[in-house]
Structures are given as structure tokens and as C-alpha cells.
Length: 605
Image 1 (cartoon, rainbow, N blue to C red):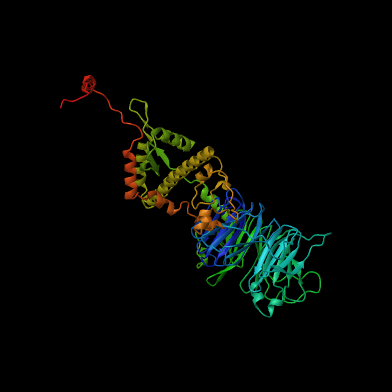
Image 2: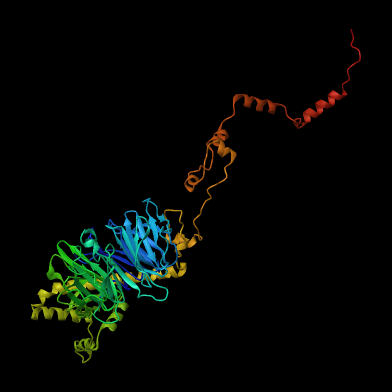
């Protein structure tokens, strides 16, 4: 069966702004597809390293993608170029199960840590965003939170847990609005798999007091009223088979159609235009009219989405069978994201209908069966007896190995029959290339109709040869990456330098583990800093603090004055020790004469 990803999908989203589909899978890969043609627009590999992606969401502008992983990491991406915009603080190493974009700069998350956590993107250029785990209403859930849903028109948030508890919160005050279902200590309900607010009903003054919230647990769809006097309007079992859970819910814009997907791979479309408008006294409700039902996947449907493209309605489904598919509301198969053949949503003749995904599998298998392999002979590529060209970079020895490996026994017998007899009775062995050229000329002379198909065959051979070289180049690159990975080992994301703006994976290999430095508010100030009026109480002040004082640099570099120069010269004129004089022979003889000369005591008058 044709697959969209190499691993089971965690969800599939639709961006009405860009008309694109976003899919994520367990091997931490995210792909962006063009919904109109089914072509791939962007691929993000290793979005969360080796961790599985558990849930995804789009912000209110539908420009940014938010992904969460099993280890509690959350990242915000640019949906057009795949760049990381924000990386959110990890509260606990627990799986994230729900993401809700409350406002343009606020994100709410829930998960197995049983907490409701907020994130504020006040500074757009900040990569690292801290968490705000202090929910004013308190962390009241005692079990793992599995589902969350937001109603912007009423400002209400619904959260549900593994033990079946459902709480509706007032988002503005962060307080409990009401308990739809509170789990008693002695008993527990089935885990709630999905929550869905009927947004159109919540905006209508008449319908907002009817059932506007749907919860799924154990295959039962419960209908709840949030603003009416009676809370539970009833429930009914939706799946076709027994002991099946509903894991995907979606409604159209006017809330007249409900789409559900279950763990058996079935997709159902219900007419709910007049359903859930009046409460049931007790017990289960009758099922709404079933418009269409079909099996779209071979395993669990993890998400379904009903959306409009131009004026037509379509259904997007993602499954753990590694595929994401597109359908019409009446169950017609449009195609699988990742298939070679493109579709055009404006032209229904390009849809895969009346085929289904399982008949498409047979067609793919037929395409993959090799028809006729081209023979490599004496460095020439021979197809239908016609020499095309010599394969670059291949020696004669390699070509002979390919001939021996690809040629069948029938082809070998044909080559033996083509050997011509020698005049002296011995068999003359001609080269296969000569035989092929002769056969080509003879076949072209005897069958002129082959000339029309020669160009198409030659084009196919060129494509096969080009694809062969591309695959070899890809194998070489993958082998080189694996070799480098064995040398350097696995990259630890915790070793990234959080204080820098650029960091390559090889920087992370040599950077020691770092923790975020929290500075004290009362840093000691020196007397010189206080005299200059320097204040350092926050981390931003510390970053802008000058490491040197300009006054000191000016004093050091200032030249001495003229008086100072005179003092220094006068000080140098009076040496502390007498100078050393080296005596010569002339000076020594002169000193002897001076000593021998005696002056008289009295001079003659």
C-alpha cells in the first residue's frame, strides 16, 4: 500500500490560508503538501531528534506550525521555509497530548503531566520561551489529560482525562466554569479520546444553549450542553464494529455534518443539522442519519478534517497505517499524499475514484515489475537492438559483470545461436555489440513500424539510466553520513549553547553541557560603580555593563606635560653612582708624570 511517511502518522492538519496540508509522523518528520495537486512543498526531518511527535497545531493566523514530542519538547515553525521560530521550555519530561492557540501570542498545552501550561510570545525575536505553569484555577486533574478543545466565541476551554473526567474552564479568569463529568473515587469512566466544540452553534443565540460539545469515549459520542439547564443530552455508539473507539472528530463550518474516524480505519459522515437540539430524558440517543461510511485506512484513523476548497467540500484523514488521504464527502477517493500521479481538485476526472487505496496498491505493484532491462554490451547501452551511448565512468569489467548478472538463460541461448560459422569449420565468435547492430539494421529494414516507437523507448532508457546514477549518488551520500555519525556519535541536544544565536551540530559535540544561568537580583556594586551611577539588577543590565571604564583608558593613554618632562630630565642629570671611565695608555702615562712633578713651597718673587 502506498504510504505518505515511513512511520505511523500522529495527525494531519489543513491550512486554509496557504491551502496546504501538514502531516507529522512518529519518526519526527513533518511534511507540507499542496492540497490542490498533492505535491510535496516542504519536508522537515528530525524535527524533535529521535523523539516521536505526539500532536500538532496551527496558530490563529495559520502561518506557524506548533509541534510537540513525547519527551515534552515544543517547537514553533515557519510553515513556509521550515525555520524554527521559538523553542518552548520543557516543564516535565512527559508526553504532550494537546496544543491550543488561544490568542496570537498565547499557547496552551496539556499532557501526561496533568497540568495546564501557558506560553506567551511577547518578544517575537526570542528563541527560548519560558513556561507559565501557574494556572490560576489550580491543577485539578488527577489523571493524564488526553484531550483539550477551545471555544473562542464563549471563551471556554474543555479538558478531559484518562479517567473520564471533563472540566470546562473560563479562559480569561482561569477558573472552573463547570464540571461536566467528575470522576468519583470508587469508579472511573472510559478514557476520553476526543473533544469537539460545535463552533457555529456557540455563536447562535438560539442554538448555543443546545448540545455544543461532543466527547468520545469507548466508541460512544456524548452530547453536552454548556449553557443550558440540562448538561448531558445523551449519547450513541458510532462505530460499525464492537469494541472500537472514535479517535477523530470534525464538523463543517455550519455544523450540519459531523465526520468521525475510528480505530478500525472507518470514516463516517453524519447529518447533525437537526440533532442534539433537545435533551434526552435518560439513556442513549438514536443515531443521526448516516450519510456515508467507508473504510479509508487499514488501521486507526488518528485525525479527520472537513474543509472547503473553493466551493467544494473535502475530507482529510490521517492514519497510523503511514498514509494521509483525501476524500469527497460522499466517500470518493481523491488520492494519497505522496503518490506519483498528481490530482487537480478543480477537475474531478483526475481523482482516483472509482479506485480505492487497495486497488491502487495493485497498480503500483504492476508499475514496479521490470519489463525489459537494457543490456550493457562493450560499454554501449543496447535497447531493442539499437546502440545508444557509452555509460560514463564504467569499465569493461564492470559492464561484463552487469551483463552476466542481468542476462537470462534465454538471452544467452540467443547469443549462442547468433554466432556465425567460420569458413574452416570453426565457429567464429562475434562480439555482442556487432550482433546487436546487425540485428538493429535488419529489424529496422524489415519492420518499419518500430521507427515510431524508437523515440519513446529511447526516452525511457535515458530516464532509467539517469535514475540509476541518482540512486548510486544517494547511496554514497547516505553511507558517508553514517560513517561520520559513527565517528562523532549521537548529538545531544542538551549540549547546545543557549546563549548564542548560531550553533551547528558539530558545535554541540564539543560544547560542554550548559544550564541557564540565573543571576541574583542584588548584585554587589563597587564604590567606583556607585559613584558613576552604574546599576546592575537584571540580566539585561549585566549584558549591557561595560567591562572597562573610559576614564581609566583616557588616563593611561594621556601624554605627560612639559613640566613633568623637565623634572624627569633633571632627575636623570644627577646620577646616583659616578660614571665608569676606561683608562687608556696615554691617560696612564700622563697621570705618572703628574705624580712625579713637585711644586716648590715658595715661588721666587
